[in-house]
Amino acid sequence: MVLMAGVLGAGTMTAGAQVSTSSQGNSSQGNGSVSNATQIGKIGPQAPVTYANRFEVYGGVNFMNFMAGQNLPKRMNMVGGEALGTYWVTKRIGLAGEFRGEYGTTPVLANPYTTRPEVSLLMGLGGVQVRGPKNQHAALDLHAFFGAAHGTFDSDTKTIPAQFQNVGMYSNHTAPLAALGGSIDFNRTKNLAVRLSPDLILERFGTGTREFFAISGGLVYRFGKK
Image 1: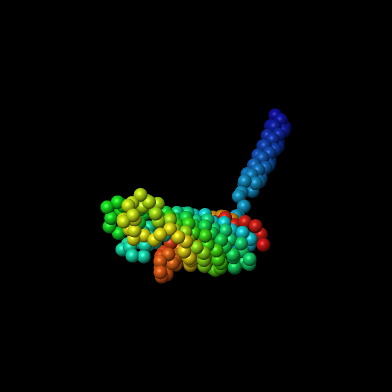
Image 2 (image 1 turned 30 degrees about the horizontal axis):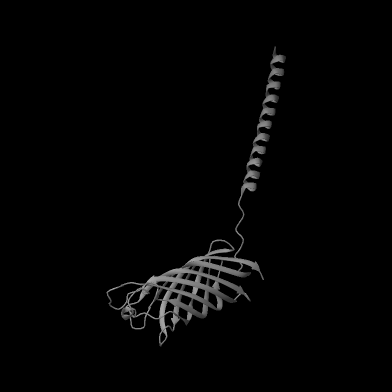
């Protein structure tokens, strides 16, 4: 009886040791699986913003104030769109061309037919962009664009009797215009950024140069390598 009890006890201890070893092995394999899964499913860091792009396009919504006649007592507000393309000759200097379209209604001199006729401006500009301080999160640029704007001022006054057609606005014509300002780009990815761009507008629709303020906001997309 004593011999049998010893044999049974030794067998039980051996079986327990095997179960324990097997459990530890399974646990180790399980941890390894979790670790591998974690490594496989981990998202890598975003590509660094190098500003090594050759081309850049920008599209946004634009706000601008303006005066539709040299002798009008008040300015007007205009809204529209802006499209800009830049070819970066170096990492700091870019050649740019852009189109802007602005629309709004203007106060006019007193008359019995109209109070706020519609005005539109179509602008074609070109110039230089200079890239300033930059890092992974944002970049500051300066620009100077020069060109011309065509103003349409008679859209709502064509049916007014001749003696009242001169309500203080310019006649339809094209005039020199410049946009001097800068922009700040907030990077979302290596290629995509959100831009805010204020401008000082100089125009000569009348006999002298007048100054106005404009600002636009939109998206920048960078592409092509130098």
